[in-house]
Image 1 (spheres, one colour):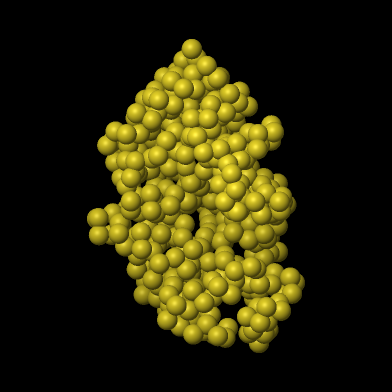
Image 2 (cartoon, helix red, strand yellow):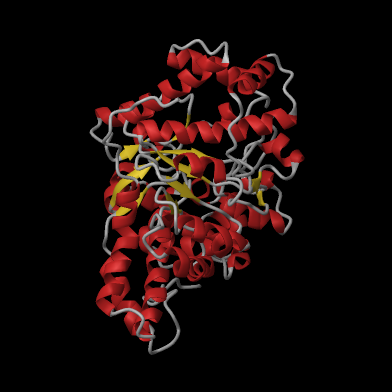
Length: 479
């Protein structure tokens, strides 16, 4: 039977001159509270506070990091229990799904998924058996029994994980009912929403008209014309802020933030309402709306997060059969310097504006993002995310941005995941990698060890606390 034993120095540098220093720096951050400011765990998980159903539904089915690896080796999504949009037949036995995952455990060697899963099994679930074809059933039973314990309910895990604050990501047309339930339960200041308006700012897609109608219902503002649409979005942002929101979140194909003349914006919006908007006009309107969202952030103080450069749903057949977020979102080259210039010229030095930039295109780290964050007071660089929230990806990020932007023009580590149990693993990994990078600077006599420890604490806790601090100013409206 394969035993699961996590080495205390995992992910720390191999060199015997650097490792002891890294170990001491890491120990200074290990027990710090977690600030999870860019998360995607469903608020209903905490509002309902029900036991997780089974190991497969917890660790395999919803995790596109896991399923995409298995799909790449020929395992159909149906065999992994991923539901079909048409209600067609898929594997319904969670034990069979788990067995299939364990039979392919070797595929995850060298991946961050393995690091997180091992941490979840060994550190969170307190089980010392590694996945594998011969251990699948025993491991399933042990995990299932653990999930039945009261201490493994979602709210109890907030305490067990030492999560001080966690954000969810919520559509602009969400009722925020789950957050209202959490407020009643005394968790309204600990689990906060994030405003995600993509379904409204990308006009012309299937379902956009329905989204606009819902916006009108929830805001009480007539969205029949462009001015009403903008007013309704402002109203929803205010509702989110009152519910505790600290930030907005924007997923666009490009970072373009070019404002349109108001007359043109009105015309494109009217065309979208009539169902006749062109792809070119829709793209221009999305760019315009990023600019408008920045204007609104200056007014209401919500931190603006942008993560462009991803071609969503690369395989249309998979999207049609299974919907979005199934592992078929593929990065494309991103450009920030020219794309963000209109926004930053208008708001980049505004003390009320805070912009956090994420990317999955490493080629822009040192060429564009670090120089932008290194001069505009409003800009911070978000932590590596998605394909880059890995040991080597995090190392490359520090190496490529620090010399130009420093440490203090970054957001610190903020996890980006739907997998609740992986959150402590992701923060732990980030703290180990930052400790490793800082230890090298100490050994090279570029920092004192005291400075390195202080910086590590800042990256793990103080910077995200500062970057995502709640707005203190009274909202205004700028024209």
